[in-house]
Image (cartoon, rainbow, N blue to C red; front, side, top):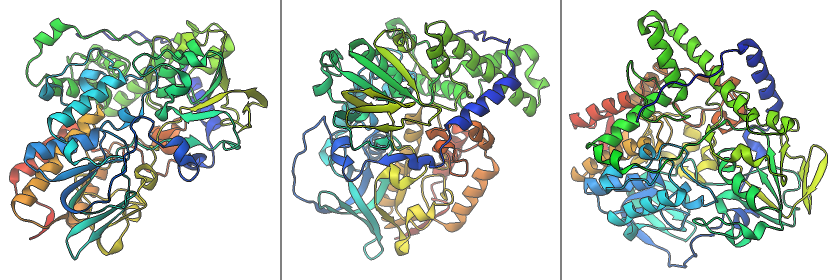
Length: 607
């Protein structure tokens, strides 16, 4: 399946829109930056972090020596374990606070949950597992069940430690191992550690004055309470909300999916919005079995490459868009204009200007779509996104905007006050008006921040001579290939640091997991006690990354505040790290060539 470019409006005033974007951004800026959000610690742990899905099972503390400890069991941890198993490394454990494999797909079970990327690209190991998603945007439970099938087939459960949180990890040079202390009293001495913590694992809460005073029911959408709402993940009939007044705080990717269900079942729904999302129409057809029959071996990698070019880079001359949705529309339209004008005639500056122009046109199409659906003009205007495409995670839905036409649904736009003013014992206060509610649901996302201690939730991570990784990276990442760092031997990172970035995030993690498994396998086969990147290799890589970087700082500084730009803190690193400028596939070629040499170049080894 391929598709034609869209025809967004061209009767727009770009200078006027640019100024409108600026004003809307300034209106939402907060001096606290990322500190406007509360950490789920102390009194909030039991209420907002406890696992509602899997019963906690007591166990005795573990004291053991281990080849590899993998911190995390989401996509990054699962793929790290998969590649270790394929490489023949047998003694390893996944360690996670969750009760099972799945990561964000374990925690997120709210009604309407679906993948908002093309499932045929997003869901890893489709060919390896002989599995095909049931539709273009797969349901959350389908993704989680696939991940757990992977874990069963490759016998990952036998070593997994769930409901276990690593509190501290320190390099012990005397035994050439990492010592891990956990909340279960464990003392695990791991030869290697893979930091596969992921960016979507810890809930965050808006720092609303009076949040602790509210006496009604309150929960985070990543800890959905079907006991309160009624229904279930696979049958989201929320019948227990029929007499309930509910406030949903947040209008990001989660809210786009959950609002239609709340609007359908609540007595009264208040949707609290600081910044609107850009929401396109969603076409979600079932998987065509005839199309599946045409697929040749290697089809998923080719599709992921096409998606990556259509989202992160640029479609090649004559290359079809295989994805055909809101993620790739901008590149598809730009390519069509370039083909009409002649690719070779444009300079880089002219190309960027053309892409910016098309960006404004696409966003205007999305704003006019709101007018065509939402009947109340004031509500429609508040729902319009005034920022560049990609400033906030784009979404799609067949029913989100339509929900605001229901008589029991009210949008509370709190952009002028930069959020809710406060919470009381019985309700919320927005724009000077108190709204009594029975339940507050926080769709405020995860700790996707530049502050790694918040993202990982590990108090202490100390390498050689007690050096903290948090201090080591305080002023920017310092890595070799994005996966190792000098002074932190036998430690590897499946993260957004200084490596390749694919538009399908699990593809990024799979690339890193495969590379790390090679290094660990090589070290074990050669009897190496320590592998650590040299200072020179690290310095050379950081220099290379920054010399070849695509500077998006100006774009980020102009974006509306959100987790993409650390709430407008332009001086802090981007949540996606420092992606390798030449692109994901150029990076893949580079590290593949490094592995083929077989000499662990740039690594210090100790036997």
